[in-house]
Length: 221
Image (cartoon, rainbow, N blue to C red; front, side, top):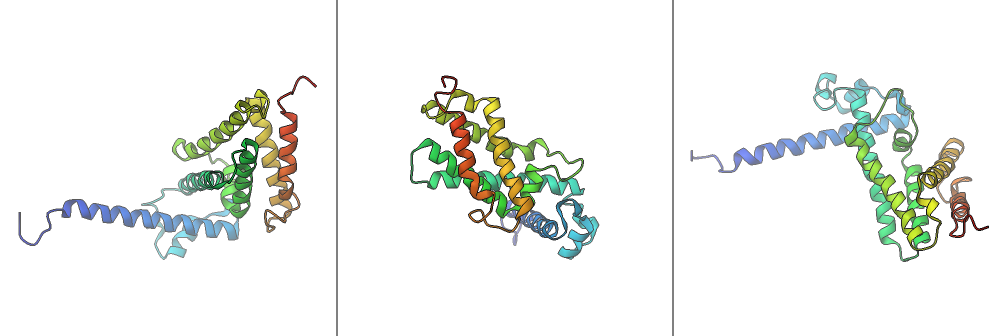
C-alpha cells in the first residue's frame, strides 16, 4: 500500500460526495418551497432557485433536469412527511379505541396539510398542469392511502363500522369529505389554525356523520 494514503480512501471519498449531493438536493428543495410559498406553486422557476442558491442554472440541472423533476421530488418528500406525521400521532395516542384513533390520525393529516399548504396543493390538488408524480414519488402516498383503508378495516373488524366503510365506496366518501373540509378551509381562511378555522374545526362533526352513515347496523334501519 503506498505511503500517505489511508486504506479506506476509495470508500470514504464517495460517501462524502454522496452526502454533499444529498445536502445540496435538500437545499434546492427547501428554496423551491420558499419560492412557491411566496409566488405560487405553479410559478416555480429554476433560474430563481439557482439565483437564490448562488449557482448557475446549468449547475442546478446536475441535480434536477427540469422543473417537473423538482415537483416530483417535493411530492415524494411531502408524502413521506405526511405519512410520518399521521403515524406519529396515532402511535402517541393514549387510547385503544379504534374510532378515536381514526379521528386522531385524520386530525393529524388535516393539521399537517394546513401547516404545509405548498405540499398540500402539490399532493392533493392538481395545481401543476401536466404534472404526474413518478411511481417512486407516488409510493408513500399510496402507503398513506393504504393506512387509511387499514384504519377503516380495523374499525370494521372491531364491530364499530359497517363493512361498507372499508369498501371502495367508503374510502371514496371518506377522502371526499375530508378533502372537502380542507379545501373550504384553505380557500377561505388560509392563515387560520386548525383549531380556529371555521371549517377545519368541524372535522370531528364531519367524521361523526361518516361514522353514523356507516354504523354497524347500516341496512337494518
